Amino acid sequence: MKSKIITAEWILSSAEYPPIKQGAIVIEGDKIIDISSQEEILPKYPNYTIINLGNKLIFPGLVNAHTHVPMSVLRGIAEDLPLMTWLTKYIFPVEAHFKREWVYWGTKLSLIEMVKSGITLFCDMYLFEPEVIRATEEVGLKALLGEGLFDFPSPGYGPLEKGLQLTEELLQVFERHPKIRIAVSPHTLYTCSPETVKKCLKLVEKYSAPLHIHLAENSEEIKEIQKRYGKRPVELLNELGGLSSHLLAAHCVKLNVREIELFAKRGAKIAHCPESNLKLGSGIAPLPEFLKAGIIVGLGTDGPASNNDLDIFSEMKTAALLHKGLREDPTVVTAKEVFAMATEWGAKALFFNDTGKLLPGYQADLSALDLSQLSLQPDYNPLALVVYSAKAGLVSDVMVDGEFIMRNYQITTVREDYVRERIHEIKEEILLILRKNFTSIS
Image 1 (cartoon, rainbow, N blue to C red):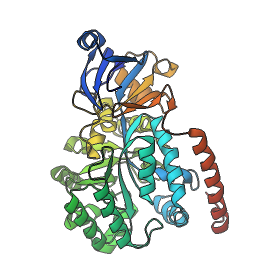
Image 2: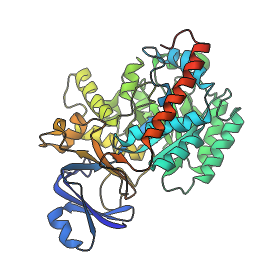
Image 3: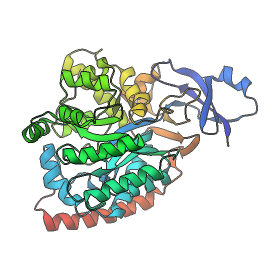
Image 4: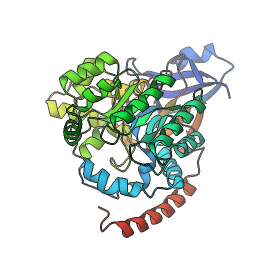
């Protein structure tokens, strides 16, 4: 069905345009060619197939700008801990036992959750990333993906040089892929030496690739980098040549005024992950200052072991309310701004410039909220419904590149029951490892 018209009660095309009552979107192949009211659109395209979604609110597919999707298999194993304790005492030791198939099935589990949350594009950094790629292609989402690189050996590739080789191979293989793009992904400045970062930057330059790294996430990181190198993380990355328009930096909780100005000047992007930062006690990123400086900011959930979900609706609401309360100003971060962060700005942060809006020339990536749900009534303000009222599970339909991957709450590309069975088996394997190596799992 190459030529079609999607109709619904409301269409919210982007943060900058008012919602369209009784709207219609015209799709040719994988692209949007027209959008307006049904009254205007239907007579113009008499021979197109009409798909009427009925009492739904259509909006651009959401973007999860930073996560670690396979970590869904670790959801709940270590809670209420500071980042460094959580990471070094629990997560890294368990990850040392990780298997390729755990990553594949953990990714499948997370992708189901994200589709049901209206997400059509995400960014991932983890181990065994080829398995993340395989699962992502099968489910049908779009993604910026990169193998996490460390100075120490990784269970995904072994020594660092093998990880750099794997990254380069992925950059070559997926150079022209319609849905998958590859990032060079050094984990952090405290797990990657300046020499490692320089090697990563050579790949960034050679392939004009994105650089995805955790940066300035908490006070402990700042102290550690200052102790090792006599510089703050942003200063160190800048001196290495990493602060550029190729950079997608996750978290950035501890950026100061000068660093924010430098980010804006260099065109670097930020993935803001408010709920993970709160849960790990890392702090609250200065989002209003990011936005005032004109930095492109996307919203991320971080991994499902540190959040513990993949719900961008929840991140939108938290991002807006957090700063309103903190600054005692209800206007400081608006619904329009966080919606843009979850759609068009998030897409730009992931270097996908042809999605994130429902406008002519953009890819047909969209999701639909079911307005028959009582929590989404009445529908005075569709934008406010998406930002302040919607939740994961209320999305009924998702389309990527003009093809539905979820219709009437049913994902068409994956068997949920089989994924559930495999996750239960993996849980039992992980429990054996925990009992053998740890006295407690929390």
